[in-house]
Image 1 (cartoon, one colour):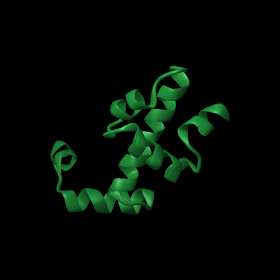
Image 2 (image 1 turned 120 degrees about the vertical axis):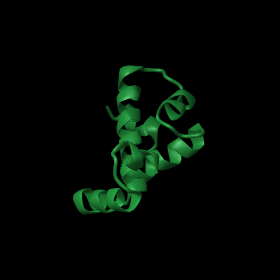
Image 3 (image 1 turned 45 degrees about the vertical axis):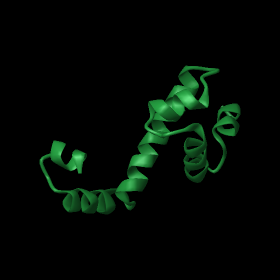
Image 4 (image 1 turned 30 degrees about the horizontal axis):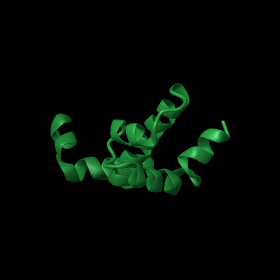
Length: 84
């Protein structure tokens, strides 16, 4: 709702545009962007705690963040980072 207001449109239209453009739901789109940002943080700040990364990208805790990360990337944040 907040984002649609910032973009001066309605929630339904914004969701449809994301679905049509990116073939995913609004929730999946946002989670993907959060994980992209988290990956940048993990690479830029070696040794950063997952709690800090989770908070920085909008997750309530490291557990929830790790679960979403694994859903999107297929591996845990630690495994992903060690492969880089």
